[in-house]
Image (cartoon, rainbow, N blue to C red; front, side, top):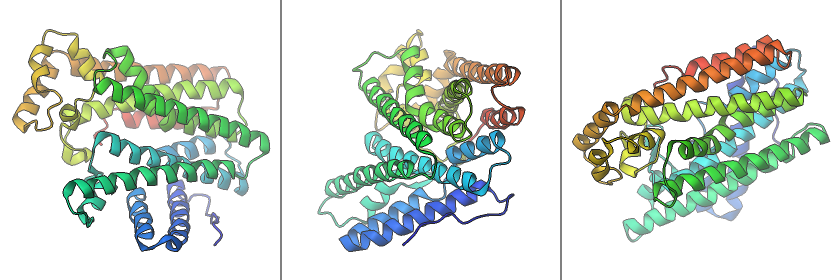
Length: 363
């Protein structure tokens, strides 16, 4: 079975093209999995169901910037960008699978995640057996998604020099993301002392590097932009990604879970070391937050009381200020890069649209 990217009308939504290619990729994997038994094929189908239907934030960012950097790109260049954007989404889902195992999460996007679905339908002799099987399946599928993404980057129809640079970029991205996750777990268990700077650095590595810097740098690489332009976009991506993660931290505690789709107060229940918590630790209010922080059986009443204390001690205001700082840095970097001729006004405007979506984000 050959996977192809269908040529589309110029105005077709790029997200649709990525979604179509993702479906083709999963159809091929599901077909190949049949040779290894019905259980394995069913696992691939369940994975496809959960991987498809996301917001495609990362692919859309890459394709929007690539189109702005190369408005006259021919079909082959556009299809190569779509292909790479698709494999960035596979990389994202690989990280999500591993993240759900590490965090012990059973839901995502307002429904059971892959682990939750598998555990609920597993024929295990006990709940513990079913969960172990489901989590093991998620780890293995995460490994396969990671492998599929890397092979996709290696097979991209780009020049040999561009492929080498792309693979170097992906390798560094995976290294930094894993380092960030490793630090995150260490922070949650008190192995590393929590402070604001450590938490922010962790967030840059864990989230910003692959969610924003990777798509922006890949777009610049495909557009054959200058090294200085790529470096600027890397910095822009780090600031955007950090703002995005800080928004997530705020939403989990202060947002409406019916809108953002996450478990209400899950960060407080899991004892997650966010910038909110790192700041609160430095205040006298912490002694009233600490006793219930990280309690698996945290009640709604205790969680809302903790939320109010985080607001009272200034943690919410502090993180809102940090988000503003990150977005200000984005605006400054883009303005300077545009004046220096590093990136076009269209590219700067396209990134600013992405930045504007972060302000007041509810989901």
